[in-house]
Image (cartoon, rainbow, N blue to C red; front, top):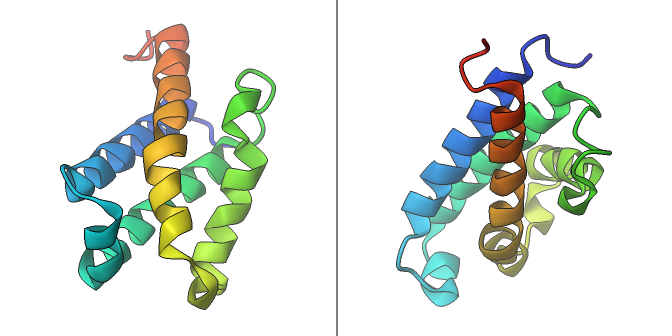
Length: 118
């Protein structure tokens, strides 16, 4: 069931993405891959992002198809249930290439909706 407050879910995505960027700021893949705590923290924040995307339902799919929302929602299931198969390189690539596209779409949508809800 889609969230009754899409603004809150969009803010959740943006806040978790910002936290992820802080966790990996100035780092390189090799450091990320060898730092289990950072990988665990990033994966948990990604789970939250995926859950917020799930709560949004499919309202963003047509408006921002380049984000690949369905894949994002499915990735949450992988993070929760198939965690042993998670490749640190794929997570790093998601952070460095996918997250900017996602946050741009969320910021654009918040602007469209009016950030304060008015």
